[in-house]
Every structure is written in structure tokens, then in C-alpha cells.
Image 1 (cartoon, rainbow, N blue to C red):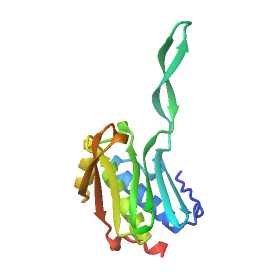
Image 2: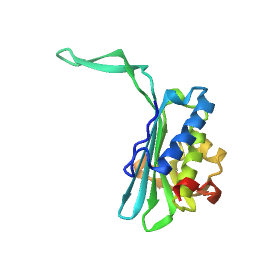
Image 3: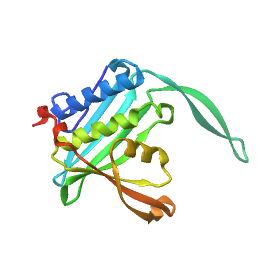
Image 4: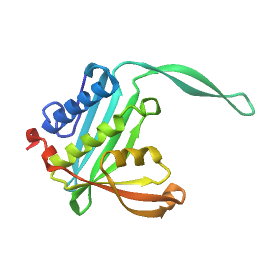
Length: 194
């Protein structure tokens, strides 16, 4: 069972429907599972004239996860583990227009669960980001990445992003942080969204 959720209207939102379709096709070929194995949630919202998008992919069947259980034994906490069945999130990301510059879309909070890394999901999702950006007439995607995040840097390089600047950020523990951009191919604009 697949669903698309969105402030623009769940199943009648043409962009949401197309993102769902493209994501399911990419996941099916990447993970060798059927589209029914996934739930794709797409939300979009316009705040102060700027679009904000969020895409989340979850498995549509329970998956065993070890969960920490903390018990207080009078003096200290004891940690044990129990296995619970969850519908795990595989990956998610958000996109937001750069304030006062709608030609740029900022890619934020890209995450692929550890159990699903090294399977091509992050690279496939970079293409989904470009489709969304082209569909709202953005010219460039932008992201900041800690230079210690070798996995994300590898994905960005492989999918055609370019590093344009580096600075030190206290938010990243005084590690260097780089700004990356990617030109958006206008041919990826979804005709159904026009």
C-alpha cells in the first residue's frame, strides 16, 4: 500500500503523485523490492510565499529493531535491549526555497538509515530533489555538508554537485563545512505539475 500525503491535497496533488511514482520506481530497481513494500510520504507547504517540501520513505512491513530499555536499579540505570517490530524509515529529506531568492532550493536533513546505506538510495533521491526543484522553476540546488561527512560528499560528487566554498562552523564542532550547488536541468520539470 502506497500513500502520498501533502498540504496541497494528498492523492490529487500532481507533483506528489509523480514524486511518489518516481521514488517507488527508483526504490524498486535499487532494492529489488516491489512498490507495495514502501510507503512514500510527500508533504508540501507554502510559507510566506516560499515552498517547503519533505519526502520520507518507510518500509510497508514490520522490521525487527533492537531498542534500548533503561531500568533504574536504585543507584544507576541499567541498559538492556529488546527487539520490537517497527515500520522503519528508510530515508528522508527536506527542500526549501532560499529566502528572497526563489531560484535556489536548499536541500536539508538528507538521511538514509544505516541499514539501507550503500544501496544507491541517496543517489536516487538526488534525482528526486532535482525533479522537485525543476518543477517549481528553481535553477540551482544548494546544500551545506560537514567535511567529515564522507558518505554525503561521495554522493554529491557522483550526482554532479560542485563544491563552491568552505567555512568553519561552530554548529558542526568547529569542523569545516562546505557549500555545494547543482544546476537544475529544466528538462526534468514535471509536465503534470504545470
